[in-house]
Every structure is written in structure tokens, then in C-alpha cells.
Length: 187
Image 1: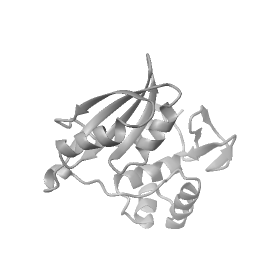
Image 2: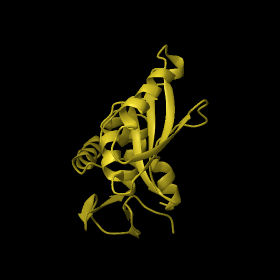
Image 3: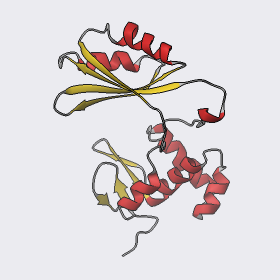
């Protein structure tokens, strides 16, 4: 049986069906197919109008507006941004993945401190064979990257060692796609 616009799924849970859209239940947000299609449309081009999205989905622009506002209120939509291809600009930059090995008691504090820096684009903690923090770091040059690591990261309490991998060639850069998620759930 193929899904309909009223089919529901719960973020982080199993597919469910009911009559309400964007409903909180046990701190999970349930989105229907229309919500996912609106998110997908916005991911493709967040500058398009609600009217254009409504025509594409065969719903009114006010329906799109209401759903977008609800998703913004629930922080499903965190914001809108512009993706810049720095290779086509004259802005010099070095990107690196910095892996920080820490004392397990200090990992959260170190990760929070790293996340405060404007040079850190993304920061994650990971538990594999040991606790580590992985951060995607931006710098204007290799010298600036070195200074950041030597003067800002290394002195943090709990840092045991640091591994830096400079990104030399970008093979793919993308964000999580609602469309791919929907396909995986067969919605």
C-alpha cells in the first residue's frame, strides 16, 4: 500500500498514522508526509514562496505557512542559511578535522569549550575504544590553524592528545536530506 499525504511518522520512532499533524507525544515530534515534503522543498530552496511550495504540493499557501510556523516553533526548522562555495571566492581557508583525546571526566567540558569557538564549525563527542571529540575547524591559513590548536585547544584541562587532519580535497559536502530519510522509511 502506498503512503498518502496523511501518513504519519514519528521522528526517531516507528511509522504511525493518526489524524493530527505535527503533534508532540512523549517529547517526540510527529510529522506527516506533507510536513516532510515542505521540509524537502525548503531544503532545496528556502527562498521559494509558500505559494510556490503550495502549488507543488497541491495545498494552499496558508497551509504551508501554518506548518512552517509550527515547525519553527517546535525548533524542527532551526533557521535559514546560505551555502557558500569558498573555492569560488578569494577567501583563503583551511579546513581540518581535529580529533581531541580527553580524560573521560573532562570530555563534556572540553567539547562545550570547543563549541564556543567561531573557528569550530561542528563538534561531536564519540565513544569508540576511547572517548574523543571530533571537530571540524576553519582557519584562514595553516599558521592560524596551528595557533588555534596550540594556544586554544591544547591548554584545555583534560586534553590528552590531538590529531589534526587537514582536508585537502572535498569529495562531497551536503546536509541531511529529508527526501532521503523519507525514502528510507518508504513514505
